Length: 570
Image (tube, rainbow, N blue to C red):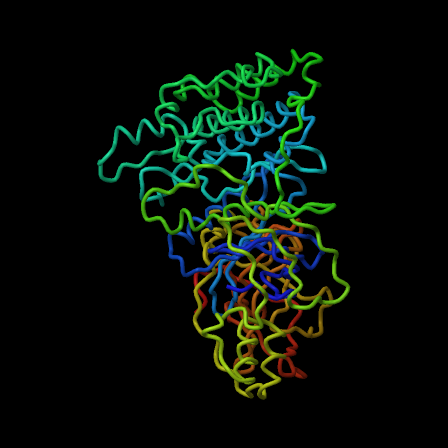
């Protein structure tokens, strides 16, 4: 699809620029009402249930894993709310280059390389302890944060958590070929022609991949050469030892080389027992560092990587690589693989646009330098949801098309330019919950269907408050799982005080009905939810009375209402 216009609102955030565009997703730079910048990945829902489930797994895994060396997923939902056609994932933005570009900078030392490897080992230790295997550890999925120089492991789009159902139909799980462990290739050879055979990656696969990363940082090359046709030399991976790093680069200390070669051992048992053991081994090696660790690892000036976008400040969008490589594993009905020669995903780095003083023009998205396997960002169209062949003709049709993707007050204002607001609006139609909302509420937040709590639009009591159809409410006091709407009882804090609930309000037969589909906590984390509004004065009554003085699009309601957890809007 064509890029969305600057100023489009998705999940409460405002689109400011395009970070990247591929065949199956577009990633935007967005700004929250509080001014925080994030990356927002927009994926079409028509790719099927399997792909939607994989994207939600990425979101839930990223929100569970909290560590300075792991990137955070901040929320997700469906868009537009009225007629969902896209899934959006909100991702943390990290300032800094990818590990490969960082490692190619002249002057890098052994000490710096070991520190970055230590940080990735810490990230893997946290993931593995939680039962999660990353399955795509490589330089392109590690960013070096400019603020503190630490490595951050990103992109959980192909990660697997113990107990999850298998989504891949082929022999191998998703991954990048040169980083695939020998045991994976051995399993494939032993199960050729076996129906339903599927290799299950484990922590040892992540450690092997980190060994490939370390080898490349030390030597500037892969541990095993590619075949003449550019493929992986499986025989070498299975049966040959890689050339010792100090023979490729004499600046590599033997103690560091020993760690690297152990990571590249042919079986998981020959490697370290886990990421914690690897971390301890690297700390022990670091304790014996001498002056040579401060010397340039690559004294010669190595060819610089051509970045896709370079400015004074760089924003690296976490998970953009997945968004732009989705076609590789979404389209394939069998084995899911990435290109043999791993190249950095495009558009991980872009310039930070200044906060606009006024809404910029619709076509203000910054250019992104393409690579050969990424679709270029297309020129902004007036009708972002229609191709040129399908675009309706005529001024009236263009206006209707321009209104189609809007929600809230903007939608009302747009429609008002064409026709009068109907005096008798229809009843709110039945509506399914956002994808993943029920699972998030019950599994992660530990709320039960039917749980409720008090929320408010204003601190002022005793008089109605004016709201619009997209006005959010806030949770007053912690919402504890199992508590009633007065706050009595309950255990774990499901949503903290001042969490904002956003969605849509409907007017029908003198009552206002609310359907809230996103919950944003004070620290910026967004959860998909499914909450309906109840009347505090009439226990269990859905909706609240419309107060006298209300106008079309501007409703007067009680400042305090109740929201209830549901599994479907009826």
